[in-house]
View 1 (cartoon, rainbow, N blue to C red):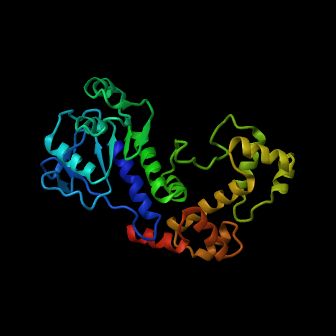
View 2: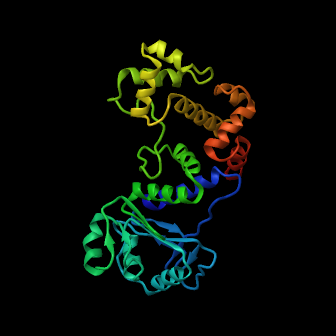
Length: 304
């Protein structure tokens, strides 16, 4: 269930960040209007496999789970083979890639799945290339091994479709605490890692406390007793960015929270986050998230 909701949440959040929806999704069951998830309760599905047409789809994901029955299904296999002939991306969540492999659609592809099912995959599908990675993207096949990796897999997929700015926005919304290298990384804070150098944490705290009236890099250096060059080195080593870029990201993400969580005007939010004018905020916001503040508000209102 966590793998399913993690993957879907990434798609829904991508739509929230766009002025027009980027994705739509359907849930497909075997032969009824509900599916028993592996936690033991029923979830609704929008369609059944029998008679389902894949012509309007770009991707199909098979969602498995620790307690999901591992039984071959001819209707499912026929649907997947039809999708493969039409060039769709095929994916597996948790042990979902096992069904793709049984349908003969993973031969020669690298894939991953939950460790509990790895032996079964190796024994029954010797032409598949099993991986121990959390998630794998091999051409038009994607797979993940568990719940956390389902989110990261989908973020990597969205990044290929719409770029890193959309993914950064999704990470910000979902406050991801573990982001793969493929998908980027969340903003570092003074409390992110107790092992960070104390002087570096002091700089981060000063930035977090001075959003409305940002401090200059030289001012920050004077406050903590370091040189400008020393601060730049700390940010390069521990945040893989420059102090100025980090400070801007900190302010722009604060602006995003205010845009989506309050009804304050864009002008007021610009002032509260240290931007001289509304157009300045709008330019930086679009550069970072890919849409304007007004478009972000409109997307929020559509989802309400």
